[in-house]
Amino acid sequence: MMLPALLVLVTAALFAGAAAYITVAEQPARLQIDDRALLAEWKPSYRRGFAMQASLAVLSALFGFWAAWQSQDWRWAVGAVLILANWPYTLLGIMPTNRRIEAIPNDRGGPESRRLIVKWGALHAVRTTLGAAAVLAYLWPLLPASP
Image: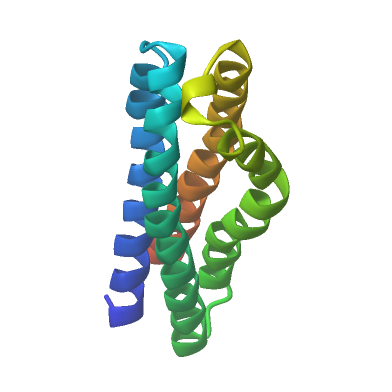
């Protein structure tokens, strides 16, 4: 396996794994706590997660385009586009909700902040799906050619 392919798979799998963890473990667990604690937990968790996942998405896309160029196989670019799609989706689809959550002072956590964080969780699940789709797309060019 060539170096770009290895780097592509590692970064995409890390992105998809982190997104899946948030969707299936962290978000359901945080929803079990009271409204104020929920809001106070979500804010730093989101900031840290955003920095990590944004970097992984960009790295994975760059490695995907590198693999496509090096191998002259366009299928790597499919995965790169899928993982990179997280950026516009986050900026256009999730960021308005994030801004509304961030604007609520922690001591004002209540039903509205909880509703927004529940909505955020559903929106974030799309990032999990895009990450998993990118991993699958990156595996596609590694499949053996059919006889």
